[in-house]
Length: 373
Image 1 (cartoon, rainbow, N blue to C red):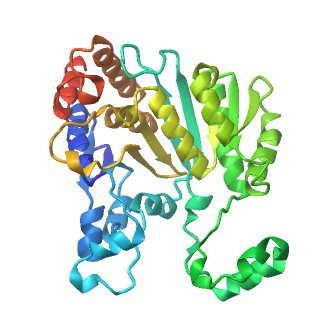
Image 2 (image 1 turned 90 degrees about the vertical axis):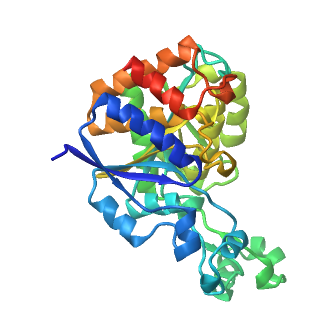
């Protein structure tokens, strides 16, 4: 019997390509695992009206963690048009399965390391070592949205925010779309504390909270207030506070000054993509969705349908994601071996995909890393 059971979720587009690359490396490293394939993604939305079927949720409950490829997401109207004819007009609404997965399993922490590996021609500079801690289940991504606006909600808004609501009150309800940003004290405390603990464990000198409390006073304000309390428990680590808009500028100007960044869900999503571009783009952007008892590991790039099956895209993001999975499973030695092999292949520069100026395939990159192992 295998030591680990891992849900295998290729998803859509190039997710399948990079998962093949991951399997080459996992086989070489001899991880004692059983891989259980699960259905998730756009094809299941079109055929079943559900991109994250119940059978896949049950599969995940029988595994230790999941490795995920990529997902296709489209706007509401476009998604409905792609349903099979018998499913159209039934009121089905597409929602991102990866967001649903995070909420279903309470994967409250999104960890995104952004490291400039030596020899990568796409590095903004070579001394960047940033990790983003993004709260993963709250904020604008909770999915509490309305269009048209219900009359009951309009009445509540008018009751508690009469002055601010006044300019909307004469609009037809069908002309108003509404999204809720919900941050909890528990969620803020959890992601902030994890950021400080990580900084303490790995020797980072600062933790930067990235929010917008001067405008979004209550939700971003809650994050800042909790950060100031928790920072007192870590006197050797500096707390820096920045607004999301200013942070984008400072990361371009002085990325080497930053170590651990902590933010809420949407701001964390934005800032982590910027950090990824500083170290080569989404082809090098790994991530872990971590809960108390379960975790899902995924590269942060999209499904890139036009490249599906061409084995053209850079698999390094997926291979670095495998490294995060190995660490979470407690296979630290294998994780270190894998990262060392990846860094050597990058540094040598002999095997490169098109984004790095080369002509090698997705699987050739994986094979090169496997040889180093």
